Amino acid sequence: MILSDVFVLLLLSCLALIWWWDRGIKQSAFLKCKQYCENADIQLLDDTIQIKKIKLEKNSHNQWQILRVFQFEFTYTSEERYQGTLEMLGKHMRHIELAPYKI
Image (cartoon, rainbow, N blue to C red; front, side, top):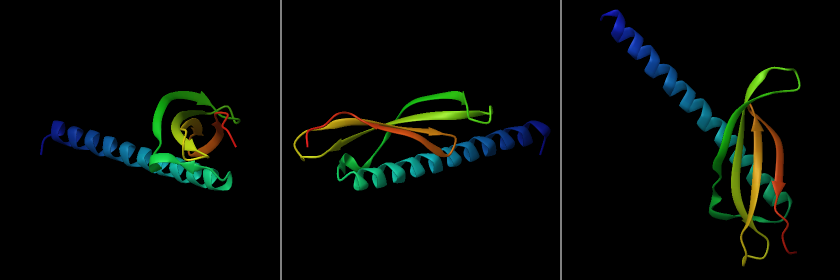
């Protein structure tokens, strides 16, 4: 095995690890969103969230982390769809916001 093969293998391993870690963050965001919707007595539609934006941002300890903004749809009446967003800074939920909806 030559050095270039080792480098390619290391690079592919790092990419797989980043992808696996990112999927874990998305799964955590989905579970937090589902729990929030259940507590608010609304229904998370399609049981899915989509990534809307990714950027670097500093946390409260002045350290750079990845901010992921997820978008989801929910309903209260089962007739109309509304938009919501959930922000994850690193692996922690920072904020969740729901569009105004009819009760």
